[in-house]
Structure formats: structure tokens, C-alpha cells
Length: 464
Image (cartoon, rainbow, N blue to C red; front, side, top):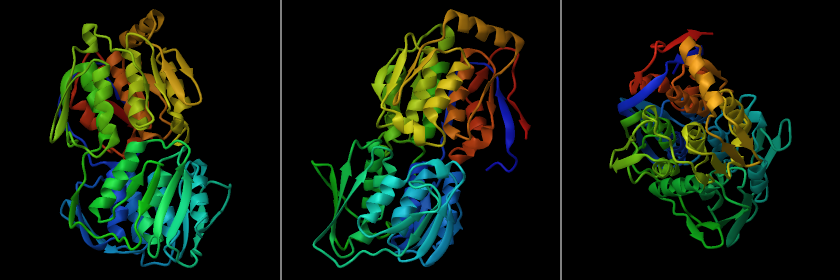
């Protein structure tokens, strides 16, 4: 974790990328497993847990709620409390959307009084659909400020008498994390009655829901889905520690390094993401193949190679639906700069309610490189660089002047645009330490893969 936040980092132009790098643990798995371990009977040893801003937020939140945990070498041991020992707590979630959405659902039925808050951007990220779903089954949650947004105040729920079946419905079209929160809290709601969760509207990012269900099964709770898009949990279901659980490498973080293998020729091998990965973003390799990459996978990694754009190779253009992998789609938006024809990314409206409005931000930053970008409510079309833009790029390279990229305190924008160095120009990433949210030493690991080109031959940075 970076103690002094850097104002910028400059990345030299690059022609080639090759080598091997291991990615840190999955954020999505780490945060889910931390909460599941806290709600389980028995101690859980977590190996490979991601050490980043988002996981620190979740660990601190659980400690504030009285959950005991201790470090044992490279592992974290969580002493499951089958609930939260503290009945009152003020919980800070930073800008971790997964943390606030899963904690809100779990705390709604924990029998205590809690406050959930985050940074300013978190208070602009919607949570109303989740709160509405919880309120229908007796949760007592109120908004401190704007309706539908954090901060939240949670009071003990009024669940009412037990029935044969308890049903609720949720609109998960804005975020699959709403459904994930309800699923992880399901054993609390199914204590005395079978639980059915019905999904209204289009369920986005479906692989993240599959990940949630798979991890819940590791902790002893089975979720059954029927063809009508309803999810069922039997009454009396209880979490139990699996003993030890290992966290896979982060497939979303791997996407930038694998993309470097496509642009820089490779081979680039990313370790830690197995071929049978639980993570939806592992499907990013299919996109790389569609754009012209040579890909091989093993039980511990993925390797990518290509002729490399420095040889004149142009990526194949794609027009695809990214509803299932919206985070990895951001990497594709930058790869589109190197394509032979315009690339269209569809069904990415969820970008608007992430760490920043990613649709607007990506369009703006791609434009800094001279790209023509078309923007819709839930789609983005990126045209390859024109001859005029390529000429401007060459002028920047000759003068050694970097093109500066705003990052909007968004880790994924910072990592995506590191790939622009393969245009053969120096790139300046502003506020680069925003990557601490998921991949604190991203730039250092990326640099081990890159062979430099041109006179601008060192990575350097200034501190704020």
C-alpha cells in the first residue's frame, strides 16, 4: 500500500512485452470470503487474500463489528461468529461497492443498530433497489441524506412471524451486487422459513452471481435456481467454515497484463488465474482470441502472444455484448485504438454507477489520444486512430512529451490507459496510486514485462 500518494507516473513508449507475472488475489473473491467466514461457524484460514484498499475496508468493517481475526504468516484467520458480536457500530466502507452492498444486507437482520458510510463518491452510488428489497421483508433502513444513496442507518428488523416461505424481489439491472448481498444474507432470512429471491429486470454481470453461489456452497449453503430466474435457499441453512480456502488471482487485474501480451507480442504469462477459474472476467481470454491473440491456458495461468502491433499487426475489430464482464470491457475500449476497424462495446450501462461515470470518462480519455468516440446510454464505439491522430502521436514521441490521462480516482481507468504506451508515445497517468484499490504495485509489475523504445526510457514519478 502506498503511503505517499504520487501526483503522476510517466510510462515510456513500448514496442514489446514479454515475461511472467503473478497477479494478486481476486478482489471479488476476497471480499465475499471475508464476510462468509465472519458469518460461519468455526475458524477459516484464508490463503492468498488480496491486500488492497478495498479488502482493508472490509477487514476494518468486520473488526468494527466485533469479528475476531488474526494474521498467521501469509494467511488470515477469521474466527466465525455466525453473526456480529457488536450490536452497535459505525462502519466505513470507503468506495467499495461490494462491501457496502453485502454488509447492508447482512446487517439488516443482525439485530443491531449500525451506520454505513463511505467517501463522497460512495454517497453518489445507488443502493435504493437493495434497500427496497430488504424493506419488503421487514428491514428498517433509512437514508441519512439523499433517498436511494448512502449513508445508511440500520435498525433491528421487524421480520414478523415465521411462514412456510419468505419471498422477496429485487431489481438487479443496476448492479448484480444487490443480488449478491441478498444471497449472502439468505441464511439469516431463511432461519425459520424457506427463502425465495425473485429477480426483476435484466440481471447484469451474471458471472459474479455464479461466483457468489459457488463460494456460498464452499461454506455449506446451497442456492437452487429455477428457470423463472428465482433463487431458493432452504430454511435452516447455516454457514460452516471449510477450514482453509485459497483465493484465486484476480482475473480483472490480469486483463491489462494479458492485453499487453497481445499488443507487445509476448509471450506474456500471467500466473494465478486457473483455466477453471470461478471468475467471470476469466472469459476475457475469449475476447483476446477474437481480436487476434494466441492464447494457452493451464491450471495456474494464461499465456498470450501475437505478432505485436510494432510489426504493423492490427487487432481484429469486434462488436460485442459485455453485460457479463463489464470491468474487463474497459480494457477492450483501449485495445480498440489498435484495431483495424471501429469496435463497439454494448450493454455497459453499469459503467455509469461505478467508481466514476466510466462511460463519460473513457470517452474523454480516449479522445486525448485523437480517437473518435461515439457514446450512448449503454454503449461505446471507438474508431481506430486516424492518419492525423497518428501524426500527432509521432510528434509527441519525438518531443518526449507525455499525453496525460485523468484517472478520476478510478483504478481501472489508470490500469487501462497504461496500455496506450504501445502507441509508441510516452503516457502520463495522473494520480496513479488509485490502483491501490485492487492492485497496489500494478505499475511496478507491468514494468517488468515491457521493453522500452525511444529516448523516453525510464519510468518516473512525482509526489503530490
